[in-house]
Image 1 (cartoon, helix red, strand yellow):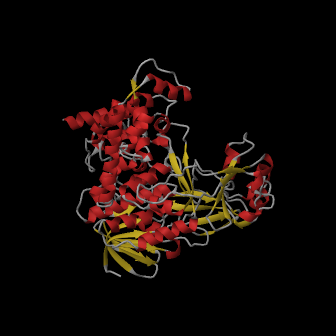
Image 2 (image 1 turned 120 degrees about the horizontal axis):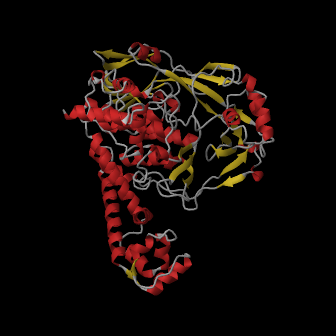
Image 3 (image 1 turned 120 degrees about the vertical axis):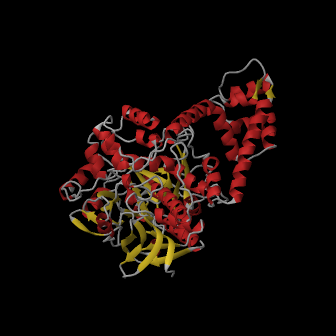
Length: 622
Protein backbone atom coordinates (compact mmCIF):
# COMPACT_ATOMS: atom_id res chain seq x y z
CA UNK A 1 0.00 0.00 0.00
CA UNK A 2 1.10 3.56 -0.63
CA UNK A 3 1.64 6.02 2.20
CA UNK A 4 -0.27 8.75 0.37
CA UNK A 5 -3.06 8.68 -2.22
CA UNK A 6 -4.46 11.37 -4.48
CA UNK A 7 -8.02 10.12 -3.95
CA UNK A 8 -9.55 7.77 -1.36
CA UNK A 9 -13.06 6.46 -2.04
CA UNK A 10 -14.97 5.12 0.96
CA UNK A 11 -17.61 2.56 -0.02
CA UNK A 12 -17.86 0.05 -2.87
CA UNK A 13 -21.46 0.58 -3.99
CA UNK A 14 -22.59 2.16 -7.24
CA UNK A 15 -21.35 5.64 -6.30
CA UNK A 16 -18.05 4.33 -4.96
CA UNK A 17 -17.36 2.16 -8.00
CA UNK A 18 -17.93 5.01 -10.47
CA UNK A 19 -15.93 7.44 -8.31
CA UNK A 20 -12.95 5.09 -8.00
CA UNK A 21 -12.98 4.21 -11.70
CA UNK A 22 -13.20 7.86 -12.79
CA UNK A 23 -10.44 9.15 -10.52
CA UNK A 24 -8.09 6.27 -11.37
CA UNK A 25 -8.75 6.42 -15.12
CA UNK A 26 -8.00 10.13 -15.09
CA UNK A 27 -4.59 9.39 -13.57
CA UNK A 28 -5.06 9.90 -9.82
CA UNK A 29 -3.55 7.28 -7.53
CA UNK A 30 -6.74 5.98 -5.96
CA UNK A 31 -7.63 3.74 -3.03
CA UNK A 32 -11.06 2.13 -2.68
CA UNK A 33 -11.84 1.18 0.93
CA UNK A 34 -14.86 -1.06 1.38
CA UNK A 35 -16.18 -3.10 4.30
CA UNK A 36 -16.50 -6.24 2.18
CA UNK A 37 -14.60 -6.89 -1.04
CA UNK A 38 -17.14 -9.62 -1.89
CA UNK A 39 -19.97 -7.09 -2.25
CA UNK A 40 -18.38 -4.50 -4.55
CA UNK A 41 -21.00 -3.23 -7.00
CA UNK A 42 -23.79 -5.20 -5.34
CA UNK A 43 -27.40 -4.56 -6.25
CA UNK A 44 -28.79 -4.15 -2.75
CA UNK A 45 -32.39 -3.80 -3.86
CA UNK A 46 -34.00 -4.74 -7.19
CA UNK A 47 -31.90 -6.45 -9.90
CA UNK A 48 -32.48 -3.81 -12.58
CA UNK A 49 -30.93 -0.66 -14.04
CA UNK A 50 -32.56 2.30 -15.72
CA UNK A 51 -36.24 3.11 -16.06
CA UNK A 52 -37.98 6.48 -16.36
CA UNK A 53 -35.29 9.22 -16.26
CA UNK A 54 -32.90 6.74 -14.63
CA UNK A 55 -32.20 5.16 -18.02
CA UNK A 56 -31.21 8.57 -19.36
CA UNK A 57 -28.75 8.92 -16.47
CA UNK A 58 -27.11 5.56 -17.26
CA UNK A 59 -26.68 6.61 -20.88
CA UNK A 60 -25.15 9.92 -19.74
CA UNK A 61 -22.71 8.10 -17.44
CA UNK A 62 -21.69 5.91 -20.38
CA UNK A 63 -21.33 8.86 -22.76
CA UNK A 64 -18.93 10.55 -20.33
CA UNK A 65 -16.81 7.40 -20.00
CA UNK A 66 -18.28 5.79 -16.88
CA UNK A 67 -18.86 2.07 -16.49
CA UNK A 68 -22.49 1.59 -15.35
CA UNK A 69 -23.83 1.16 -18.89
CA UNK A 70 -21.16 -1.38 -19.81
CA UNK A 71 -21.72 -3.40 -16.62
CA UNK A 72 -25.50 -3.32 -17.18
CA UNK A 73 -25.16 -4.55 -20.77
CA UNK A 74 -22.81 -7.37 -19.82
CA UNK A 75 -25.15 -8.61 -17.09
CA UNK A 76 -28.62 -7.95 -18.53
CA UNK A 77 -31.18 -10.72 -18.90
CA UNK A 78 -33.90 -8.49 -20.38
CA UNK A 79 -34.10 -5.10 -22.12
CA UNK A 80 -37.15 -2.85 -22.48
CA UNK A 81 -37.55 0.68 -23.78
CA UNK A 82 -40.24 2.21 -21.56
CA UNK A 83 -42.77 4.84 -22.67
CA UNK A 84 -42.48 4.11 -26.39
CA UNK A 85 -46.10 5.26 -26.80
CA UNK A 86 -45.06 8.77 -25.70
CA UNK A 87 -42.66 11.32 -27.18
CA UNK A 88 -38.89 10.64 -27.38
CA UNK A 89 -38.20 12.82 -24.31
CA UNK A 90 -39.97 10.11 -22.29
CA UNK A 91 -38.35 7.04 -23.83
CA UNK A 92 -36.37 5.38 -21.07
CA UNK A 93 -34.19 2.25 -21.39
CA UNK A 94 -34.33 -0.36 -18.63
CA UNK A 95 -32.53 -3.66 -18.13
CA UNK A 96 -33.34 -6.57 -15.88
CA UNK A 97 -29.99 -7.85 -14.64
CA UNK A 98 -28.30 -10.92 -13.27
CA UNK A 99 -27.52 -9.67 -9.76
CA UNK A 100 -24.42 -11.81 -9.31
CA UNK A 101 -23.00 -11.19 -12.79
CA UNK A 102 -23.53 -7.44 -12.31
CA UNK A 103 -21.32 -7.36 -9.21
CA UNK A 104 -18.79 -9.70 -10.88
CA UNK A 105 -18.48 -7.44 -13.95
CA UNK A 106 -17.96 -4.37 -11.75
CA UNK A 107 -15.23 -6.08 -9.79
CA UNK A 108 -13.46 -7.28 -12.95
CA UNK A 109 -13.52 -3.79 -14.49
CA UNK A 110 -12.15 -2.20 -11.34
CA UNK A 111 -9.41 -4.82 -10.92
CA UNK A 112 -8.32 -4.12 -14.51
CA UNK A 113 -8.10 -0.37 -13.82
CA UNK A 114 -4.63 1.11 -13.47
CA UNK A 115 -3.88 3.43 -10.50
CA UNK A 116 -6.51 1.70 -8.32
CA UNK A 117 -5.76 -0.11 -5.04
CA UNK A 118 -8.24 -1.87 -2.71
CA UNK A 119 -8.47 -2.24 1.06
CA UNK A 120 -11.11 -4.15 3.03
CA UNK A 121 -11.84 -2.22 6.22
CA UNK A 122 -14.28 0.24 7.80
CA UNK A 123 -13.53 3.96 7.84
CA UNK A 124 -14.48 5.37 11.26
CA UNK A 125 -13.25 8.96 10.92
CA UNK A 126 -11.59 11.47 8.63
CA UNK A 127 -8.56 13.66 9.33
CA UNK A 128 -8.26 17.34 8.46
CA UNK A 129 -5.61 20.06 8.55
CA UNK A 130 -6.74 23.70 8.37
CA UNK A 131 -10.22 22.76 7.08
CA UNK A 132 -8.71 20.57 4.37
CA UNK A 133 -8.94 16.78 4.18
CA UNK A 134 -5.73 14.92 4.99
CA UNK A 135 -6.82 11.28 5.21
CA UNK A 136 -8.99 8.64 6.87
CA UNK A 137 -8.77 6.33 9.88
CA UNK A 138 -10.10 2.79 9.91
CA UNK A 139 -11.46 0.33 12.45
CA UNK A 140 -8.17 -1.58 12.29
CA UNK A 141 -6.41 1.51 13.62
CA UNK A 142 -4.79 2.37 10.30
CA UNK A 143 -4.39 5.85 8.85
CA UNK A 144 -4.37 6.45 5.10
CA UNK A 145 -3.23 9.88 3.92
CA UNK A 146 -4.88 11.45 0.90
CA UNK A 147 -5.23 14.75 -0.93
CA UNK A 148 -8.98 14.15 -1.34
CA UNK A 149 -11.63 11.81 0.04
CA UNK A 150 -15.01 10.77 -1.40
CA UNK A 151 -17.58 9.36 1.05
CA UNK A 152 -20.09 6.99 -0.59
CA UNK A 153 -21.43 5.19 2.48
CA UNK A 154 -24.89 4.28 1.18
CA UNK A 155 -27.23 3.05 3.91
CA UNK A 156 -24.43 1.98 6.25
CA UNK A 157 -23.99 5.06 8.46
CA UNK A 158 -25.52 3.97 11.79
CA UNK A 159 -27.79 1.68 9.78
CA UNK A 160 -30.66 0.07 11.68
CA UNK A 161 -32.68 -2.79 10.15
CA UNK A 162 -36.35 -3.28 11.11
CA UNK A 163 -38.43 -6.46 10.73
CA UNK A 164 -41.64 -6.17 12.70
CA UNK A 165 -40.84 -5.63 16.37
CA UNK A 166 -37.21 -6.64 15.85
CA UNK A 167 -34.44 -4.23 15.01
CA UNK A 168 -30.69 -4.61 14.82
CA UNK A 169 -27.69 -2.72 13.46
CA UNK A 170 -26.85 -3.29 9.82
CA UNK A 171 -26.18 -1.48 6.58
CA UNK A 172 -27.68 -4.24 4.48
CA UNK A 173 -29.02 -7.72 5.18
CA UNK A 174 -26.29 -9.80 6.89
CA UNK A 175 -23.84 -6.87 6.84
CA UNK A 176 -22.89 -4.68 9.81
CA UNK A 177 -23.46 -0.95 10.03
CA UNK A 178 -20.72 1.69 9.90
CA UNK A 179 -20.30 3.68 13.11
CA UNK A 180 -18.12 6.62 14.09
CA UNK A 181 -18.07 8.54 10.84
CA UNK A 182 -21.34 10.44 11.40
CA UNK A 183 -20.17 11.61 14.81
CA UNK A 184 -16.81 12.69 13.35
CA UNK A 185 -18.52 14.75 10.65
CA UNK A 186 -20.92 16.31 13.14
CA UNK A 187 -17.96 17.49 15.26
CA UNK A 188 -16.60 19.23 12.16
CA UNK A 189 -19.85 21.18 11.84
CA UNK A 190 -21.91 19.07 9.41
CA UNK A 191 -25.63 18.62 10.05
CA UNK A 192 -27.16 15.18 9.52
CA UNK A 193 -30.59 13.56 9.39
CA UNK A 194 -32.23 10.13 9.14
CA UNK A 195 -33.87 8.49 6.16
CA UNK A 196 -35.32 5.07 5.56
CA UNK A 197 -35.73 2.73 2.66
CA UNK A 198 -36.93 -0.83 2.34
CA UNK A 199 -36.83 -4.02 0.36
CA UNK A 200 -39.32 -6.86 -0.32
CA UNK A 201 -39.04 -10.54 0.58
CA UNK A 202 -37.12 -12.75 -1.85
CA UNK A 203 -39.14 -15.69 -3.15
CA UNK A 204 -38.26 -19.21 -4.25
CA UNK A 205 -39.31 -19.10 -7.90
CA UNK A 206 -39.98 -22.85 -7.93
CA UNK A 207 -42.91 -22.24 -5.59
CA UNK A 208 -44.65 -19.67 -7.87
CA UNK A 209 -47.40 -20.64 -10.31
CA UNK A 210 -46.42 -18.55 -13.34
CA UNK A 211 -49.30 -19.89 -15.43
CA UNK A 212 -51.74 -17.53 -13.69
CA UNK A 213 -49.47 -14.46 -13.89
CA UNK A 214 -49.18 -11.94 -16.74
CA UNK A 215 -45.95 -12.38 -18.70
CA UNK A 216 -43.80 -9.31 -19.38
CA UNK A 217 -41.30 -10.20 -22.11
CA UNK A 218 -38.44 -7.98 -23.22
CA UNK A 219 -38.42 -5.94 -26.43
CA UNK A 220 -38.59 -7.88 -29.68
CA UNK A 221 -35.42 -6.13 -30.87
CA UNK A 222 -33.56 -5.40 -27.66
CA UNK A 223 -31.25 -2.41 -27.50
CA UNK A 224 -28.58 -1.72 -24.86
CA UNK A 225 -27.25 1.09 -22.66
CA UNK A 226 -23.67 1.59 -23.78
CA UNK A 227 -22.60 3.46 -26.89
CA UNK A 228 -19.55 1.13 -27.03
CA UNK A 229 -19.49 -2.27 -28.74
CA UNK A 230 -21.23 -4.24 -25.97
CA UNK A 231 -23.57 -6.88 -27.40
CA UNK A 232 -27.36 -6.90 -27.43
CA UNK A 233 -29.33 -9.83 -26.09
CA UNK A 234 -30.36 -12.71 -28.35
CA UNK A 235 -32.38 -14.51 -25.65
CA UNK A 236 -34.16 -12.93 -22.70
CA UNK A 237 -35.86 -13.90 -19.45
CA UNK A 238 -39.41 -12.68 -18.93
CA UNK A 239 -40.70 -10.84 -15.90
CA UNK A 240 -44.31 -11.27 -14.75
CA UNK A 241 -47.09 -9.21 -13.22
CA UNK A 242 -49.08 -10.16 -10.12
CA UNK A 243 -51.66 -8.22 -8.10
CA UNK A 244 -52.60 -7.79 -4.49
CA UNK A 245 -56.23 -7.97 -3.39
CA UNK A 246 -58.44 -6.83 -0.53
CA UNK A 247 -57.79 -10.17 1.14
CA UNK A 248 -54.03 -9.54 0.93
CA UNK A 249 -54.50 -6.03 2.34
CA UNK A 250 -56.63 -7.32 5.23
CA UNK A 251 -53.96 -9.88 6.10
CA UNK A 252 -51.24 -7.23 6.05
CA UNK A 253 -53.33 -4.95 8.28
CA UNK A 254 -53.28 -7.66 10.95
CA UNK A 255 -49.61 -6.84 11.49
CA UNK A 256 -49.88 -3.04 11.51
CA UNK A 257 -49.81 -2.93 15.31
CA UNK A 258 -46.39 -4.62 15.12
CA UNK A 259 -45.16 -2.48 12.23
CA UNK A 260 -42.20 -0.20 13.06
CA UNK A 261 -43.59 2.29 10.55
CA UNK A 262 -46.87 2.71 12.45
CA UNK A 263 -45.75 2.38 16.06
CA UNK A 264 -43.14 5.13 15.77
CA UNK A 265 -39.93 3.10 15.91
CA UNK A 266 -38.91 4.35 12.45
CA UNK A 267 -38.17 8.09 12.52
CA UNK A 268 -36.67 8.64 9.06
CA UNK A 269 -38.75 9.53 5.99
CA UNK A 270 -39.02 6.89 3.28
CA UNK A 271 -39.10 7.28 -0.51
CA UNK A 272 -42.32 8.94 -1.65
CA UNK A 273 -42.30 7.28 -5.06
CA UNK A 274 -41.35 3.78 -3.95
CA UNK A 275 -43.45 3.26 -0.82
CA UNK A 276 -43.75 0.08 1.20
CA UNK A 277 -46.83 -2.08 0.71
CA UNK A 278 -48.17 -0.98 4.12
CA UNK A 279 -47.63 2.65 3.03
CA UNK A 280 -49.67 2.01 -0.12
CA UNK A 281 -52.54 0.43 1.81
CA UNK A 282 -52.73 3.43 4.13
CA UNK A 283 -52.20 6.20 1.56
CA UNK A 284 -54.47 4.67 -1.09
CA UNK A 285 -57.16 3.23 1.13
CA UNK A 286 -59.73 3.30 -1.68
CA UNK A 287 -57.63 1.09 -3.94
CA UNK A 288 -58.34 -2.63 -3.60
CA UNK A 289 -55.38 -3.86 -5.68
CA UNK A 290 -51.75 -2.94 -6.32
CA UNK A 291 -49.49 -4.13 -9.13
CA UNK A 292 -46.48 -6.31 -8.31
CA UNK A 293 -43.53 -7.06 -10.60
CA UNK A 294 -42.12 -10.57 -10.38
CA UNK A 295 -38.46 -10.14 -11.35
CA UNK A 296 -35.93 -12.98 -11.76
CA UNK A 297 -32.59 -12.39 -9.99
CA UNK A 298 -30.48 -13.87 -12.77
CA UNK A 299 -29.97 -16.49 -15.47
CA UNK A 300 -29.21 -19.45 -13.23
CA UNK A 301 -30.94 -18.78 -9.90
CA UNK A 302 -34.51 -19.51 -8.84
CA UNK A 303 -34.53 -16.50 -6.49
CA UNK A 304 -37.18 -13.90 -7.36
CA UNK A 305 -37.51 -10.23 -6.38
CA UNK A 306 -41.12 -9.14 -5.74
CA UNK A 307 -41.00 -5.49 -6.78
CA UNK A 308 -43.80 -3.46 -5.18
CA UNK A 309 -44.03 -5.53 -2.01
CA UNK A 310 -41.39 -3.71 0.07
CA UNK A 311 -42.24 -4.18 3.74
CA UNK A 312 -40.97 -4.13 7.32
CA UNK A 313 -43.91 -6.12 8.73
CA UNK A 314 -43.22 -9.23 10.87
CA UNK A 315 -42.02 -12.16 8.78
CA UNK A 316 -45.06 -14.31 9.68
CA UNK A 317 -47.40 -11.60 8.37
CA UNK A 318 -45.31 -11.24 5.19
CA UNK A 319 -45.53 -14.98 4.59
CA UNK A 320 -49.27 -15.20 5.24
CA UNK A 321 -50.08 -12.23 3.00
CA UNK A 322 -47.88 -13.51 0.18
CA UNK A 323 -49.82 -16.76 0.04
CA UNK A 324 -53.02 -14.79 -0.52
CA UNK A 325 -51.63 -13.45 -3.83
CA UNK A 326 -52.84 -15.31 -6.92
CA UNK A 327 -49.98 -17.52 -8.11
CA UNK A 328 -48.22 -17.37 -4.74
CA UNK A 329 -50.46 -19.79 -2.81
CA UNK A 330 -47.52 -22.14 -2.25
CA UNK A 331 -44.82 -19.48 -2.15
CA UNK A 332 -41.69 -20.02 -0.08
CA UNK A 333 -39.57 -17.13 1.21
CA UNK A 334 -35.78 -17.17 1.00
CA UNK A 335 -35.45 -14.06 3.18
CA UNK A 336 -37.99 -11.56 4.52
CA UNK A 337 -38.37 -7.95 3.51
CA UNK A 338 -37.10 -5.26 5.87
CA UNK A 339 -36.79 -1.51 6.33
CA UNK A 340 -33.51 0.20 7.06
CA UNK A 341 -32.85 3.59 8.68
CA UNK A 342 -29.55 5.37 8.07
CA UNK A 343 -27.82 8.73 8.43
CA UNK A 344 -27.58 11.19 5.57
CA UNK A 345 -26.19 14.70 5.26
CA UNK A 346 -28.41 17.41 3.72
CA UNK A 347 -26.83 18.15 0.32
CA UNK A 348 -27.14 21.94 0.66
CA UNK A 349 -23.79 21.56 2.45
CA UNK A 350 -22.18 20.82 -0.95
CA UNK A 351 -21.08 22.79 -4.01
CA UNK A 352 -21.91 21.85 -7.62
CA UNK A 353 -18.78 19.67 -7.71
CA UNK A 354 -20.14 17.66 -4.72
CA UNK A 355 -17.26 19.00 -2.61
CA UNK A 356 -18.33 19.96 0.93
CA UNK A 357 -18.37 23.64 1.89
CA UNK A 358 -16.93 22.93 5.35
CA UNK A 359 -13.92 20.75 4.48
CA UNK A 360 -11.94 21.31 1.29
CA UNK A 361 -11.34 18.28 -0.96
CA UNK A 362 -13.96 16.22 0.91
CA UNK A 363 -16.75 14.96 -1.39
CA UNK A 364 -20.08 13.23 -0.71
CA UNK A 365 -21.81 11.02 -3.31
CA UNK A 366 -24.85 8.75 -3.34
CA UNK A 367 -27.32 8.01 -0.56
CA UNK A 368 -25.24 10.00 1.94
CA UNK A 369 -26.69 13.00 0.03
CA UNK A 370 -30.28 11.85 0.46
CA UNK A 371 -30.85 10.22 -2.93
CA UNK A 372 -32.33 6.82 -3.71
CA UNK A 373 -31.52 4.55 -6.64
CA UNK A 374 -28.45 2.96 -8.19
CA UNK A 375 -28.43 5.39 -11.11
CA UNK A 376 -28.66 8.54 -9.01
CA UNK A 377 -25.81 7.24 -6.84
CA UNK A 378 -23.63 6.19 -9.78
CA UNK A 379 -23.78 9.56 -11.54
CA UNK A 380 -22.88 11.38 -8.33
CA UNK A 381 -19.94 9.03 -7.85
CA UNK A 382 -18.75 9.71 -11.39
CA UNK A 383 -18.94 13.49 -10.89
CA UNK A 384 -17.26 13.35 -7.47
CA UNK A 385 -14.47 11.14 -8.85
CA UNK A 386 -13.88 13.53 -11.75
CA UNK A 387 -13.83 16.60 -9.52
CA UNK A 388 -11.64 15.04 -6.85
CA UNK A 389 -9.09 14.38 -9.59
CA UNK A 390 -9.53 17.88 -11.01
CA UNK A 391 -8.94 19.41 -7.55
CA UNK A 392 -5.76 17.52 -6.72
CA UNK A 393 -4.44 18.09 -10.26
CA UNK A 394 -5.03 21.85 -10.12
CA UNK A 395 -7.55 21.70 -12.98
CA UNK A 396 -10.88 23.47 -13.45
CA UNK A 397 -13.97 21.91 -11.88
CA UNK A 398 -16.28 19.86 -14.09
CA UNK A 399 -19.91 20.94 -13.74
CA UNK A 400 -22.90 19.98 -15.88
CA UNK A 401 -25.76 22.46 -16.17
CA UNK A 402 -29.48 21.77 -16.11
CA UNK A 403 -29.65 22.02 -19.90
CA UNK A 404 -26.62 19.73 -20.33
CA UNK A 405 -27.74 16.52 -18.62
CA UNK A 406 -30.09 14.89 -16.14
CA UNK A 407 -26.96 14.59 -14.01
CA UNK A 408 -26.81 18.39 -13.93
CA UNK A 409 -30.48 18.60 -12.94
CA UNK A 410 -30.02 16.10 -10.12
CA UNK A 411 -26.98 17.78 -8.58
CA UNK A 412 -28.45 21.27 -8.89
CA UNK A 413 -31.71 20.10 -7.28
CA UNK A 414 -29.81 18.56 -4.38
CA UNK A 415 -27.47 21.42 -3.53
CA UNK A 416 -29.97 24.19 -4.25
CA UNK A 417 -33.23 22.82 -2.88
CA UNK A 418 -31.97 20.10 -0.56
CA UNK A 419 -34.16 17.13 0.33
CA UNK A 420 -35.75 15.73 3.47
CA UNK A 421 -36.93 12.53 1.78
CA UNK A 422 -35.07 10.14 -0.56
CA UNK A 423 -34.66 12.00 -3.87
CA UNK A 424 -35.52 10.15 -7.05
CA UNK A 425 -35.06 11.45 -10.58
CA UNK A 426 -38.06 11.87 -12.91
CA UNK A 427 -38.35 13.33 -16.40
CA UNK A 428 -40.67 15.98 -14.93
CA UNK A 429 -37.78 17.40 -12.88
CA UNK A 430 -35.93 18.40 -16.07
CA UNK A 431 -37.32 21.56 -17.64
CA UNK A 432 -35.29 20.92 -20.82
CA UNK A 433 -36.08 17.20 -21.15
CA UNK A 434 -36.68 17.38 -24.93
CA UNK A 435 -32.96 18.24 -25.18
CA UNK A 436 -31.88 15.61 -22.63
CA UNK A 437 -33.04 12.48 -24.41
CA UNK A 438 -31.50 9.05 -23.96
CA UNK A 439 -30.80 8.75 -27.69
CA UNK A 440 -28.54 11.82 -27.89
CA UNK A 441 -26.54 11.42 -24.66
CA UNK A 442 -23.41 10.62 -26.68
CA UNK A 443 -23.86 13.71 -28.88
CA UNK A 444 -24.34 15.89 -25.79
CA UNK A 445 -21.59 14.55 -23.57
CA UNK A 446 -18.92 12.37 -25.21
CA UNK A 447 -16.86 15.37 -26.37
CA UNK A 448 -16.79 16.52 -22.72
CA UNK A 449 -15.70 13.06 -21.55
CA UNK A 450 -12.97 13.05 -24.18
CA UNK A 451 -11.75 16.49 -23.16
CA UNK A 452 -11.52 15.28 -19.54
CA UNK A 453 -9.63 12.14 -20.55
CA UNK A 454 -12.34 9.57 -19.71
CA UNK A 455 -13.84 8.88 -23.14
CA UNK A 456 -11.47 7.46 -25.76
CA UNK A 457 -10.62 9.02 -29.11
CA UNK A 458 -12.37 6.10 -30.80
CA UNK A 459 -15.60 6.97 -29.00
CA UNK A 460 -15.30 10.61 -30.00
CA UNK A 461 -14.74 9.66 -33.65
CA UNK A 462 -17.79 7.37 -33.55
CA UNK A 463 -19.94 10.23 -32.29
CA UNK A 464 -18.57 12.62 -34.90
CA UNK A 465 -19.33 10.03 -37.60
CA UNK A 466 -22.86 9.64 -36.25
CA UNK A 467 -23.44 13.41 -36.35
CA UNK A 468 -22.07 13.60 -39.90
CA UNK A 469 -24.26 10.68 -41.07
CA UNK A 470 -27.35 12.35 -39.61
CA UNK A 471 -26.55 15.59 -41.43
CA UNK A 472 -25.89 13.75 -44.72
CA UNK A 473 -29.19 11.84 -44.51
CA UNK A 474 -31.11 15.04 -43.69
CA UNK A 475 -29.49 16.70 -46.68
CA UNK A 476 -30.25 13.74 -49.00
CA UNK A 477 -33.90 13.50 -47.92
CA UNK A 478 -34.24 17.27 -48.21
CA UNK A 479 -33.19 17.04 -51.86
CA UNK A 480 -35.11 13.86 -52.74
CA UNK A 481 -38.35 14.71 -54.55
CA UNK A 482 -40.97 11.95 -54.41
CA UNK A 483 -43.47 11.27 -57.19
CA UNK A 484 -47.14 11.61 -56.21
CA UNK A 485 -47.76 7.93 -56.91
CA UNK A 486 -44.99 6.59 -54.65
CA UNK A 487 -45.85 9.04 -51.87
CA UNK A 488 -49.56 8.18 -51.93
CA UNK A 489 -49.04 4.41 -52.05
CA UNK A 490 -47.05 4.69 -48.85
CA UNK A 491 -49.35 7.27 -47.18
CA UNK A 492 -52.43 5.11 -47.80
CA UNK A 493 -50.74 2.19 -46.04
CA UNK A 494 -50.24 4.47 -43.05
CA UNK A 495 -53.77 5.93 -43.10
CA UNK A 496 -52.30 9.35 -43.70
CA UNK A 497 -53.73 12.03 -46.01
CA UNK A 498 -52.59 11.68 -49.61
CA UNK A 499 -50.86 14.46 -51.57
CA UNK A 500 -51.63 16.07 -54.96
CA UNK A 501 -48.12 17.13 -55.93
CA UNK A 502 -44.49 16.16 -55.57
CA UNK A 503 -42.91 16.76 -52.18
CA UNK A 504 -39.55 16.34 -50.48
CA UNK A 505 -39.03 13.07 -48.64
CA UNK A 506 -37.91 14.92 -45.51
CA UNK A 507 -41.29 16.65 -45.15
CA UNK A 508 -43.09 13.29 -44.98
CA UNK A 509 -41.23 12.34 -41.80
CA UNK A 510 -42.86 15.17 -39.86
CA UNK A 511 -46.26 13.45 -40.08
CA UNK A 512 -47.24 11.63 -36.84
CA UNK A 513 -48.44 8.50 -38.71
CA UNK A 514 -45.15 8.15 -40.57
CA UNK A 515 -41.97 6.48 -39.33
CA UNK A 516 -38.66 6.56 -41.15
CA UNK A 517 -37.86 2.80 -40.98
CA UNK A 518 -41.11 1.95 -42.81
CA UNK A 519 -40.42 4.70 -45.37
CA UNK A 520 -37.03 3.14 -46.04
CA UNK A 521 -38.67 -0.26 -46.49
CA UNK A 522 -41.63 0.89 -48.61
CA UNK A 523 -40.22 3.67 -50.82
CA UNK A 524 -37.20 2.39 -52.84
CA UNK A 525 -35.72 5.83 -53.55
CA UNK A 526 -35.73 6.67 -49.83
CA UNK A 527 -34.11 3.34 -48.93
CA UNK A 528 -31.41 3.82 -51.56
CA UNK A 529 -30.64 7.39 -50.41
CA UNK A 530 -30.26 6.41 -46.78
CA UNK A 531 -28.48 3.06 -47.16
CA UNK A 532 -25.82 4.70 -49.29
CA UNK A 533 -24.94 6.80 -46.22
CA UNK A 534 -25.68 4.66 -43.13
CA UNK A 535 -27.82 1.73 -41.98
CA UNK A 536 -27.20 2.36 -38.28
CA UNK A 537 -30.61 2.32 -36.49
CA UNK A 538 -29.34 4.95 -34.03
CA UNK A 539 -28.59 7.34 -36.92
CA UNK A 540 -31.99 6.74 -38.53
CA UNK A 541 -33.74 7.28 -35.19
CA UNK A 542 -31.86 10.54 -34.70
CA UNK A 543 -32.94 11.82 -38.13
CA UNK A 544 -36.60 11.05 -37.43
CA UNK A 545 -36.61 12.64 -33.95
CA UNK A 546 -34.98 15.82 -35.26
CA UNK A 547 -37.49 16.04 -38.13
CA UNK A 548 -40.58 15.48 -35.99
CA UNK A 549 -39.59 17.64 -33.02
CA UNK A 550 -37.37 20.31 -34.56
CA UNK A 551 -39.70 23.13 -33.46
CA UNK A 552 -39.80 21.97 -29.85
CA UNK A 553 -36.06 21.35 -29.79
CA UNK A 554 -35.29 24.83 -31.11
CA UNK A 555 -37.66 26.40 -28.58
CA UNK A 556 -35.94 24.57 -25.71
CA UNK A 557 -32.50 25.53 -26.97
CA UNK A 558 -33.54 29.20 -27.09
CA UNK A 559 -34.98 28.93 -23.57
CA UNK A 560 -31.82 27.28 -22.25
CA UNK A 561 -29.64 30.01 -23.76
CA UNK A 562 -31.70 32.72 -22.05
CA UNK A 563 -31.39 30.99 -18.68
CA UNK A 564 -27.65 30.64 -19.20
CA UNK A 565 -27.32 34.42 -18.98
CA UNK A 566 -28.25 34.19 -15.30
CA UNK A 567 -25.97 31.16 -14.85
CA UNK A 568 -23.03 33.20 -16.11
CA UNK A 569 -23.52 35.90 -13.47
CA UNK A 570 -21.28 34.57 -10.71
CA UNK A 571 -21.81 35.20 -6.98
CA UNK A 572 -18.93 35.18 -4.50
CA UNK A 573 -19.27 32.46 -1.81
CA UNK A 574 -18.51 35.03 0.92
CA UNK A 575 -21.06 37.58 -0.30
CA UNK A 576 -22.78 39.28 2.67
CA UNK A 577 -26.49 38.89 1.89
CA UNK A 578 -27.39 40.15 5.35
CA UNK A 579 -26.19 43.62 4.35
CA UNK A 580 -28.87 43.90 1.63
CA UNK A 581 -31.88 45.01 3.65
CA UNK A 582 -34.03 45.11 0.49
CA UNK A 583 -33.95 41.31 0.39
CA UNK A 584 -36.65 39.47 2.30
CA UNK A 585 -35.58 37.92 5.59
CA UNK A 586 -36.21 34.40 4.26
CA UNK A 587 -34.14 35.15 1.19
CA UNK A 588 -31.22 36.46 3.26
CA UNK A 589 -31.28 33.32 5.43
CA UNK A 590 -31.52 30.90 2.49
CA UNK A 591 -28.88 32.67 0.40
CA UNK A 592 -26.47 32.83 3.35
CA UNK A 593 -27.01 29.13 4.08
CA UNK A 594 -26.71 27.79 0.52
CA UNK A 595 -24.19 30.34 -0.86
CA UNK A 596 -25.23 30.00 -4.51
CA UNK A 597 -22.47 30.09 -7.10
CA UNK A 598 -24.53 32.01 -9.66
CA UNK A 599 -27.59 34.20 -9.98
CA UNK A 600 -29.30 31.33 -11.80
CA UNK A 601 -28.82 29.02 -8.84
CA UNK A 602 -30.01 31.76 -6.47
CA UNK A 603 -33.24 32.07 -8.49
CA UNK A 604 -33.97 28.35 -7.98
CA UNK A 605 -33.71 28.42 -4.19
CA UNK A 606 -37.06 27.91 -2.47
CA UNK A 607 -38.01 31.15 -0.72
CA UNK A 608 -36.02 33.44 -3.01
CA UNK A 609 -38.54 35.50 -5.00
CA UNK A 610 -38.17 37.22 -8.40
CA UNK A 611 -38.08 40.57 -6.60
CA UNK A 612 -35.13 39.32 -4.52
CA UNK A 613 -33.31 38.44 -7.76
CA UNK A 614 -34.04 41.96 -9.04
CA UNK A 615 -32.45 43.39 -5.87
CA UNK A 616 -29.34 41.27 -6.48
CA UNK A 617 -29.20 42.37 -10.13
CA UNK A 618 -29.35 46.03 -9.13
CA UNK A 619 -26.63 45.52 -6.52
CA UNK A 620 -24.41 43.65 -8.96
CA UNK A 621 -24.99 46.38 -11.54
CA UNK A 622 -23.61 48.92 -9.10
